[in-house]
Length: 436
Ligand SMILES: [Zn+2]
Image (cartoon, rainbow, N blue to C red; front, side, top):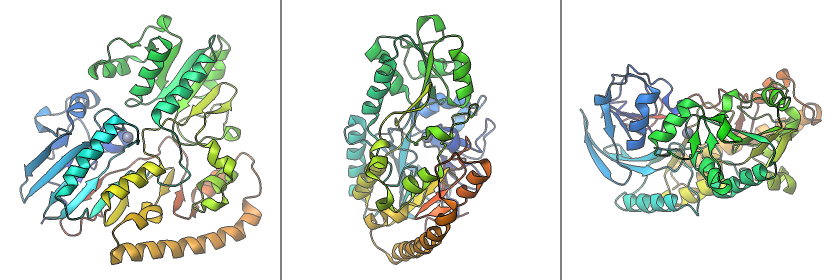
């Protein structure tokens, strides 16, 4: 089989077919309006939205994968079977199960599979059926965003109630909620229905809402509502302080990433996390025994991180427990994280290698990882006497230093709006490696 048979969320030339799991920009990085390499497979909702993100895209190259069916694709060199499964992440998001000469590969894309979510239950049922005829899943390309046991945030419904509580307890305030260009629609709808209000969104977002079939809930008229959903990148403490000079305003950030109030700078844009060194050591270390009970408890609660700002752990990614349940179902031979450049890279084999079918390579990787982390912990223990003494706000230099650290399966990176700049997988003919 030729190398570079298919690519998922990767857009370099050289593959016979390309698959898009969903339209978030960290998965479309490299895709352009002038795309002409090969057919692009995606869900019906993604196909509907894509021309509005990539104006002038050649629609004749789009191929629809219905999420409830298995598709047989005849490529130049071979035939592959692909099943698209609802990823419950954002509108149009799918995970992809591939079968062919290369074996069986499951690419999760970003996904949130809550135990109590009916859509996720349906998706689990579909995946279970699809796996019936598969002897083994050779590789899972996993959404490893929160594949660390510290990520114990609640379901989106519970988190939405917390947002509603915050808004209700500020009856005289304007409310700003930071969102992205796609996703968290269900949160806004829950707020609108619970409080019997409309939600303001910016014009492009209103068009997206209409394309998704939400016609009555959203508006671009500020006089109709006190709750506005704004682009997260435009959200800063400075903006909130300016708004409060005109009228009382609070901001709410729904995100699975933890926040720490002490490190917020006045004009810092709120598109990443701002963690103190103590927080990094306590919460991000893979040595979970080192974390206090309070730290664990607080991670799932709303937090007032500034006089005008709240953060609520509303996440469109699976938490650790959900990933664990997912992998118990799939039982792959190998795992690969799809977050290749992140604020916090988490090697999924470290925590979930135990759920994989053991083969020699898996065993070797796991042992190697343990050995590395053991060495790293010893070095960290020595360094901590001089480097991790306090809970002060980090300087840029401190952050830079800390970002280079790696501790127990967690690679700490610079926290910035450029988080997750690259994702995807190129599936090749030999051993399904994604190494180009
Ligand atoms: Zn996403």
